[in-house]
Image 1 (cartoon, rainbow, N blue to C red):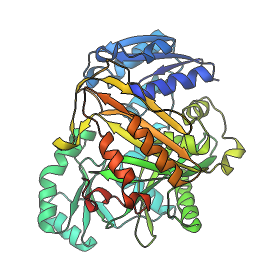
Image 2 (spheres, one colour; image 1 turned 135 degrees about the vertical axis):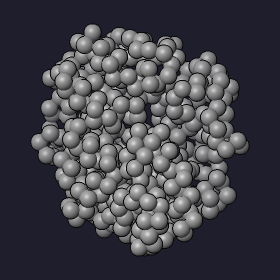
Image 3 (tube, helix red, strand yellow; image 1 turned 90 degrees about the vertical axis):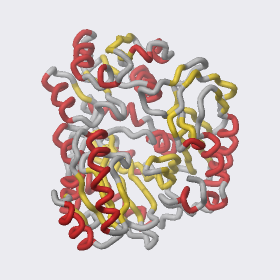
Image 4 (cartoon, helix red, strand yellow; image 1 turned 60 degrees about the horizontal axis):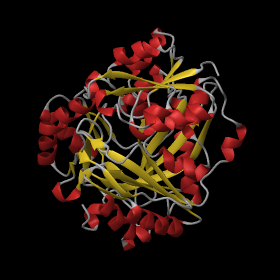
Length: 447
């Protein structure tokens, strides 16, 4: 390793994963935490922990100066950003470089390319990857309407720099376009700091399929299977699974090749994900690339028997991807449910309070990624994700049945959760039949 100490610049379950990976690699880990997280048990598992500020993320986990100061204080040779917060900030990568600290992730150059959705589209299109008709939205509303009509309805209005569905609107006509222009820019700016929008041809009732990739600094890249992330609410993923069901071998191979072509087109390194929509006719189109480890990386880890966080650290330290990784594909079937502190009966409002654990699932084929502990206070300051529950089976139905049982055993009180919604989804006949699309909840009255 070219460094012996890693600063963990995140919180919750991903911070715990990084600390565990460092320990397995024989590296020293130093965790940072806000005042709101000072009681988190994982801080005791790290080799050291330093408070970086108050509960507000802007004054702690999103404060580059505080994080770099701690990194220099503890002589960290590398920083792992996890997901969210500063993980996709090319400016933060640049700051790390200026201080001689290795950022565990892609370069600032490739991060800038994939961070601008319109530039990313152009790059991958030049590499032969299918993209949907679209482009940057003009300044004048009338021109935007004209552009939408030229593309052909339905059209998506999307944030140039945002992600996770923020700033995204579906438009069936000119009135929808004008309504989107009245609200989407502010939402996009709140999420990414930029209000820029672009238009893209919408695919009705699509599936959302993404390919996990690893790439090293020498140009080697591998596709580690794909995940179906179609079960969503307002473009926020709820359930992921691998391999994606109902994909024929030819379509699967084309998706993997397109993902690798996208990686090479932007000179990408480290872990990342290339996302596509797949139409009912079996056509697929690039939508974006995520320059970080994703929340749903656990699905691929279980399916492919890899520790992606460890591989991230190895690549950052200069290691090449082993040749045998090219043969790694998902075995059996893996399903993941995200369990959030949200109240579905109140429009999925975030829920806060003190968590009391009554029972947590475990056993053969069950993995629970969480930083939960009995008595933990859920605050309004951070993402509502409480836990990721992952079930593995020899086939999809076995994984689904295990997931249903495991969800019943995930019993906590003190905050509202999305557990019951997840149960209704995995028990639904359409889910059993793998009849998946991004409109699954709406089509079956579960939204």
